Image (tube, rainbow, N blue to C red):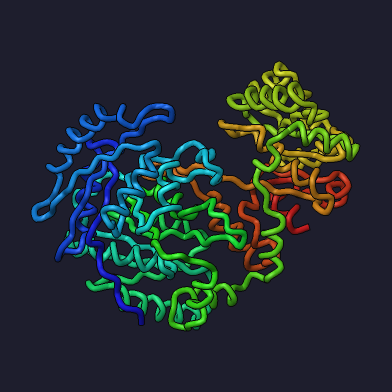
Length: 541
């Protein structure tokens, strides 16, 4: 058992806006060593290259006046030392100040996700902000990033943990905050759904050992099985007043650090309802750190390894998912797709099935023509296959330039059935493309990536025959817009049945999604169920 680390004696809080600093000051006071802790509020004055640093004197005086307001936020018994530094870059000033002050912890406030891009110094994409990312790379101390949503009355603190140094730091700070506010601390550990009782028992023992080792106060252990870690943490966060979690990033073998905190903590910080604190230890962490923890049976890392090994999903499904999982951004350069299409000598048909879609079909057809026919000749034909709409769907689609047919009129001598599958099957007869792409038309925020995202893998990978789309599905809960997996039918019926009877297909995230593409050579050899079973029938066959 490792010795419990002390709380930070010196905490540095960079203040960009004194008006939002109160929550950071209160949280910093709660995390301070109660015996001899001190907070430092830091104001940075940036002076552009080419100007003398002395030019920042006036702004420095103004910054000092603003920092005086921060002193009023100090809780009783807590002292705040205001500091102003002048420099070329905010990150450099923060790192220098932390070294001067011998800070144990830097607390940043984070206003929200910055636009995707680079930090300007060749370090790759920024996650929280260029300044935070730069400080994390060079910081001599621990880091805490706070997504502020107001944490005035803290009664319940949630700490999702997986084990490791970042998680240890998170539970230590959460314990201090909970003790300071007299709050209950909930330590949450998630395991894959369907694990055996033996593996669950190992995870429960490991969680208990982790809490005993790193908690001074009392905490409540919660072990949950879940297929979706992010959504489960977000759901549990709804019950909390504060979330504290460690970074999940592990440096890659090539030494890259594109994800300094990890995509999961970033997603939780961005979407959770309460204030979220993401912490990152100053320790150097590599794969060897986790391998060492995994070698000890009582650790959470070892329990997670056991859960992974015991999962019922065959290893080939995991490998398939890793090798055959794509993102639409990989194929966003449509001109390159056109060049590849021409090199392969294939033609492409887009089919848009409709039934009473007058509110959405117009913009969809218009965008498809504009982006994938007008700007680049990616599509060779666009067909709207209509299932006898009772509204103006057909007229609107035709007005936008689409060829429209009603599926009962296709191969009429063989009769006709109601249902989406019937329409899709007959669309094969009405189109000629070597690759056929289908996309649902009841989507209000339709984007042409729903086409090139499923088409791209077929052009790039000759081994692939059929591509199924999946996407973040917006769901409104309690008046808040959330993003998650599939709908109720998918999550409560389709996926459980697939996992039970066809485990080879368990890697499909949204098996009922209406965005998919396939090679005609395959599609003309498999059955089409006439109704909505067409999607799952295709996957099975």
